[in-house]
Image (tube, rainbow, N blue to C red; front, side, top):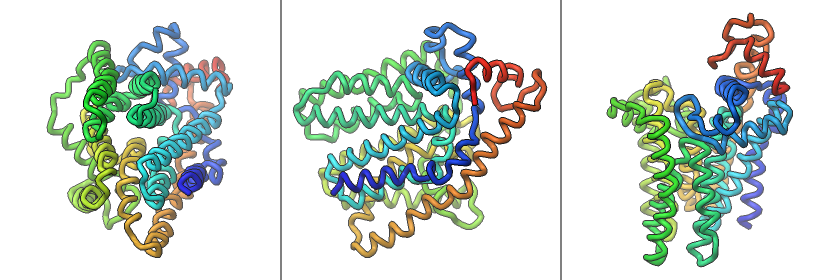
Length: 402
């Protein structure tokens, strides 16, 4: 039963790509995409892989896979978008099967996978190839969690677990917290003490190594405004993912939104932790910790961008993944009729706005970019990236971009 529900919810999550394939076909290389292509074209491959990307993160695994995909797909951007959605499907299935391994109720699994998989607020993660880094980091993290459960059950898998955590950390700056998070999860499990100590050490090693590499090659970052960073983190944690999904009058990123969305989110989390079976609490605590750690990481990495960016669509992916299973526990404890009503209301809230946002996204991130690239003089910028139109045209020919 669970397997059928997971497959159905997972494949339902990729329906927006099928239904709105025409807008998605219009998308084109944008901003950081061009920076990656330019860096790869100017530098020796191995030197480029180890260079900090835009002075922010060391992500050689993502760079190698992304550039390889550009080459394999012959520069086709729609193929890159399809790759994003294929990875998204894999993440949906991994999430669903992970919840099933914890024996989460079927209704909660369906709610969690649909919330994570179908939400229109993921549009930037699913409509911009650079965001494959966050998807891959999550893919490796979920795979590592499966390996960890396998090890706790007494089977082999320490090598696969370690590799997945290291790959997650070297794919996205957000992936650095993956090992730390699973180390926290281990603290709440009933694993044998010696095994728990070993696994905790293995878990945090990738986090420590990649953090040291970041400090050595990128620098400490100069986060002198701690209060602003923590304020950004609090806004991110309390507002997401409901800010884009549930409307209130005169909605802005301010006190009213913080109170309304924060009250709902914290209330759902507290209720779930109090009412859920004790065997499921390590799972829920790990998900809440994931959301909190990601909020703190974003706070220190992005507070300079302004509080309003804390609800950016590019930051919804992890928030949706963490909130879905927790809220799903509430749904699962409801009567069958109420469950059916909740799904009938929730699924359109998640999915219907794709109808409005997909064409807008295609116009901004595709049609307008292609038009400016064709018309802007070589010496002018045509895109938010640092490249001129002339350089972008050179890269278009070099990589056969289309």
